[in-house]
Image (cartoon, rainbow, N blue to C red; front, side, top):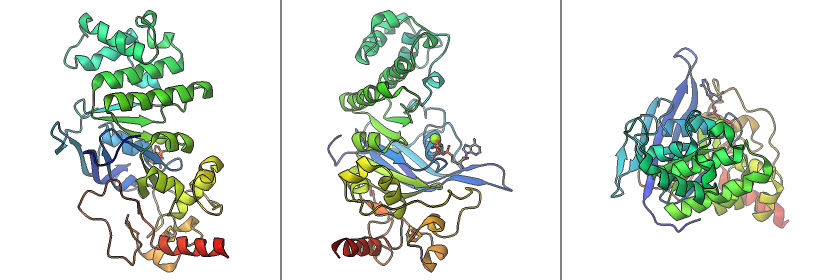
Length: 345
Ligand SMILES: Nc1ncnc2c1ncn2[C@@H]1O[C@H](COP(=O)(O)OP(=O)(O)OP(=O)(O)O)[C@@H](O)[C@H]1O
Ligand code: SF4
Ligand SMILES: [Mg+2]
């Protein structure tokens, strides 16, 4: 993990991504705003179907954006709109759950690693081989593996190749979507450690999606929690996982005892019911159909991400709020105070 007060490399403003036709649209990402600072990791958590991969794909230019803005800082740190091409003109690299998606099956792996070094060449010049082999060595793959095709490597080795490729690309932003979920459990810790080492060595900036809260706790500097296409809580990892404010975050964390024990998540919050149909989300707060604290206001008004509760004058603003602990719940201060009172009693 790294120090605060750095340039915001990736900024996303009011992003909407819609699937399906106009008749029955599904807003898989619905008004998400976030920022990630240079050299930091923003972890994204949320149940299946909450829109995590869609958010990542839109940032990487793999899925069209319906509305909103995605900007990446230039060399001087100024936020710039980048064309919505795949990989946003080399500014974003993707590390997927399935490494085969990022590798050419017919090429020796050193060429896949070297490709970003010569982005305009149809064939990667052989002179980049030495650098590719060096990078493969750095991720723990010996030179004897450089000529192999991806199918001739194990899953863990393949994922190491995609990490070497992301480093070769020197892209300002690396999107990691469940990068170790398909790997044998014995390999996962090693690949996660490697990802973190590469981030620190090359000052990479990660958006890291995972179902595994313990990996998020270990790797992330900031955490965003998604529910039905919206960001419901975001902030420093210690604050969000250690003292979660949103009832949804509290429920997610209390289901993972090792993370809950490390913080002050309070009494166990059970998540009841299924996640609603994303085509017909509940009015107001989308979590209200599963929230034990819901009030009539929750059906009428959608809470906005804010550092304070609804009663406060502090709300979402146009200044850079990256790094602040913000929560989209009308009543989180009251819920927190009631919990503290019941614990003290
Ligand atoms: N290509 C698609 N066409 C239509 N709907 C889609 C498409 N891809 C995803 N969706 C829907 O969009 C919503 C968000 O899906 P997404 O894959 O982004 O969720 P996720 O949080 O990554 O889930 P998981 O944890 O299972 O990977 C879901 O309701 C999903 O069914
Ligand atoms: S706004 Fe209301 S329904 Fe939503 S999380 Fe807060 S208390 Fe629960
Ligand atoms: Mg996904």
